[in-house]
Image 1 (cartoon, rainbow, N blue to C red):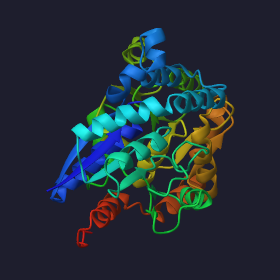
Image 2 (tube, one colour):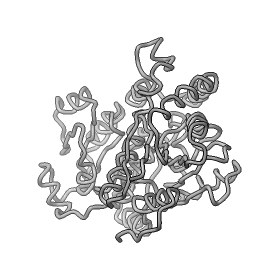
Image 3 (cartoon, rainbow, N blue to C red):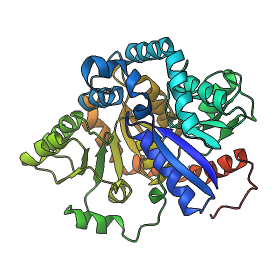
Image 4 (cartoon, one colour):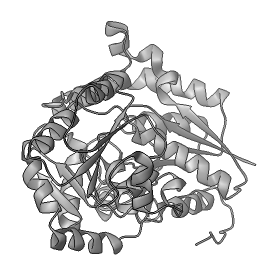
Length: 384
């Protein structure tokens, strides 16, 4: 069996989700691979300068910023992080080399940004010629030194033409770039559902015949969700909400402690987002690549915002939504009432739904074939 390492971290939920999705589909397809998911932060803890100063890991500080909406000026924080990584380039490479020697594999896949230069160099120093792949979990790169590096040893899997073009700009030729039809998602997002939307709403205690929005701001929720719900409730919109608070128990408790005029369902951390999306007509959330990709597969238009507080690597996502005409982009969620009114117009909702139907994301079956090719295996026909 071939040994495959998948390197991820928990700064945001998309990286772990991509790693788990890849492992799950490999098992379902009975690939002759031994896939191991490796938490990058655990390898590099001793070089985590912020942890030494504050006692909190970098990925945990990132999640706190997202949860509280403290993202204004995030471009400068990002560049400071990248400068720190460059400062510790040598020690990072040596640390990773030691790890690879103890953990040999035939293929290394990275689903994390920022560190791909260090990962690629260390891997090729220990195992020259063995493929290193960066699987981008954003709709586009945010150069320089975010996802794609000008290193000839790096393979790039890109889910959009924008990301593929960025790889070409950095000198990668088509033999090193693999273009997929979208981002990788967990296989359960593709599974046919036995229940229809009305049945799922009934199960959740919601009104079966009322328009429904799922409010999703990642696995740690966001305090902006409460402000959104307040504005919609005050206007007595003909709407009900599924509020995904994730691991943010304080936010969930705050929602449950209030009496709402509109029907709401408060949900904590769950692995059934795909099922909850079945009950919704559209999604309200931040312009995260994972939630947008999930919404597209589940055929949901999106209502998102893009402004100075939006993470720099997510700003293109809003452009993509406008370009594909699959949702509405607000300057601020202070305008959420107007946005929802527009979304609830039958003509608008029908147009967005038609455009989403034209999209087909098959990355979940395309990516294993790419990795198989890099491992030198004969191509196999994947199930439709």
